Image (tube, rainbow, N blue to C red; front, side, top):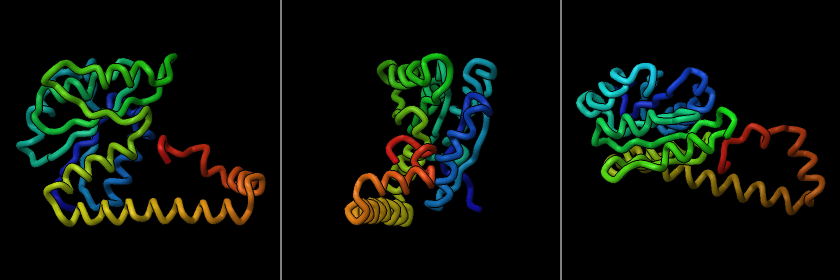
Amino acid sequence: MSDPLVGVLMGSDSDLPVMRQAIDVLEALGVPSEVAVLSAHRSPDRAAAYGREAAGRGLKVIIAGAGVAAHLAGVLAAHTALPVIGVPVKAGPLQGLDALLSTVQMPHGVPVAAVAVNGAKNAGILAAQIIGAGDPEVRARVERYKAGLGTEADAKNARLQALGIEKYLRERSLTDSWKDAAPND
């Protein structure tokens, strides 16, 4: 595999099931990534060093997922000029609202792009789009992926029209495919 272009980081290993969505979509789009657990609070020096060294190691984008206080993306953004995408992870009593607000409320000069709570899949797609701006092969893979989304939506609509609402929902609930869907699926 090629050298990683995207760093996928999380504040705790408990965030891995959510962040796996970003890893999987990057892999599907042929964008190499690396994965690490770095805490803005428990290992702040390592998180800062990662941000400072990321561009020099060839990374192009950083995705940082964290729950509750969710300071990881901001700490990384403070130490790099690379784009940082924050993934607020649903955790704690506020179920991700605190993480969302911590991710998007950044001071002037330290931007963090943010996706939906648990929206790691979109973070992976956004990272690929950023890389695709300068890499026609990655851009073409993203374009094919997005075209596939339209085809999938058209197929779902055709099935809904053929079955009707009640039968469609009954069949869909049997597969449980929608219960574990990520936001915006």
